[in-house]
Image (cartoon, rainbow, N blue to C red; front, side, top):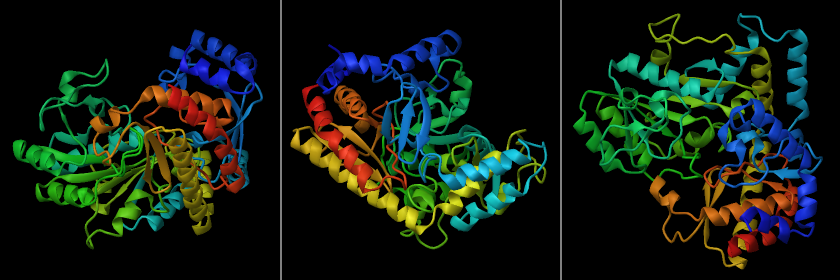
Length: 456
């Protein structure tokens, strides 16, 4: 019996009822597979690492989502981050409806574009100019183009386990040694393209310095997630970010901080807002990328940074970037409404929910005898299954986790009415709608899920 079957059978409803409750999702999955590669438009949705029937959701409200079979779940995916206020927040819905009534797009500028840019700059003291795009991949790709244009250098450094979208140069897997060139991390990425990216171990300043010395005058920028959130949550070690910025700047390279997942969610100013408080005055990344929350759930992302760098972009400078849907009026309306309603009270609620959820998860897993570690970066969290007496620092550390236990835990939580990310390498997201009652619902599902993990 698979872990999914065990979890379903252990649920009071039983496996037969569970099958009945996923009938329409199963039907939709089959139909989708006939016309969409793998049946999904983004791979993690396929349940490839957890097995079972992927759910098709038709409605969201506050802290819950409802699937095509009418089953409601407490949601800890949050559209992978944008649902900061909760699903279908009335203010966000109203803003989008008003924008829709005025037209879906004009191929020209709209006031919401500069209003959203102003909102971002007001929250991020180190950002002087902003360019809106449609996806996080576009944002990181453009930031790298700016860095190369500014420095006239070809090479980029990234860290193993950090994800910066699916542009060719960033889908590079680590080579052997500390400063070898990357190898293609996906079919369709040429060796020549991947070779322009150096992949280093995360949290390793010695490796970073070695890379700069080995490729002196050739490295345009270091790109890093502000806190790694695409291999589960793995924040930088104390002092790492400061050392990274100092090392890059000493060698004439730029620093790009990817806040696509953490931006305006880990705190009001993202994870950089947390780290900035400990930094020497004036020490900061050069460019930032944003996504998820900044679009309020609609396709929108942004690049921000120093004025001199950002004004290298066309039409002012020689670095080209464009997009018909960039700054779409519906997306900027959703983003503006989200950020304007994300006040201090909202961030207090997020922090309280994340803290309470951390305690409930730790208590349940400990009671069931499951070795684990809850990882945090501001209000984002994830769970590592396995023995971690020392805090993990690298992608290799994360890969040691027990994914079989995660699989069993995931399906038991789903059976208990809680929707988790269908991968051991993804972050969990709370919202301002995750109040004490909602956390209580999650707590009710945890003991059975912890026992399922223990038995896996």
